[in-house]
Image (cartoon, rainbow, N blue to C red; front, side, top):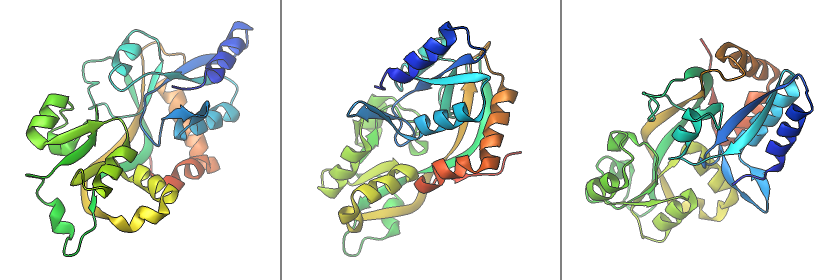
Length: 255
C-alpha cells in the first residue's frame, strides 16, 4: 500500500543506535488522510503529518506501516503498530486497551446526489428507497455505526466499494442515488474534477462529524502527553493549518 522506503529508513536509524525511538503509525486506506500509493509514491495527509513530526524533533522517528480498515485492530493489539491515527474511540476500539489523544481536527460525512431540476435539500431528509453508495468498513451514523456489509446491503440498499471516486461516479452516472463521502474528500475531488462540480447536489445534512484522535497502544515508545505536546507545537508553528486547511478539515481549539 505504501512505499517501503519510509519504514526502511526508520528501521535503519533505529538499528544504528540513534537516540530516536521508533514509533510506527498504522496507515489504513482512508482518503484523503491515507491513500493507496499511485506511481509508487506515498500520498495523502498522513505522510505530510509524519514529515512535519519528524522535522520538529529528534527524540522520535515516526514511520508509516501499512494496514487495512478491518486489520488495523489486530495489528494494534499484536503490537505491529504503535499508534492508530485519524480514529475515534467509538469506531470499534471500546474493548481494546489504548490511550486517546485529541488531535483537534474535525471533518464531516455528507450526502451527495445528482443535481436535477426541482431537487433540493429535502431529497436528503429520507433515505428510504434510495440506492446508496458507501465505503466498505466505514461506521455511518445513519446505520447506527454498524459497518457489517450484510446489514448495509439489506437495510439500506447500499452498494459497498473501496473508492470514494467510484461512489461519486456511480451517482453522476445514475447508478446510485446518494453517495456518502467525507467533506475533505469531496473538496479534493472537486479540485481534481472541476468539470463535474455542477453535476452534484451536496447535502446540508451531515451524517456525522469526525473528531479525530490518535490512539496509542500500551507501552508505546511515546506517551500520550508527549504526542499531544508535539501536535500543539505543530499548531503553534502553523503546520497543522498548512496541512489540513486546504482540505476543509477544521483545526479546532484544544482543551
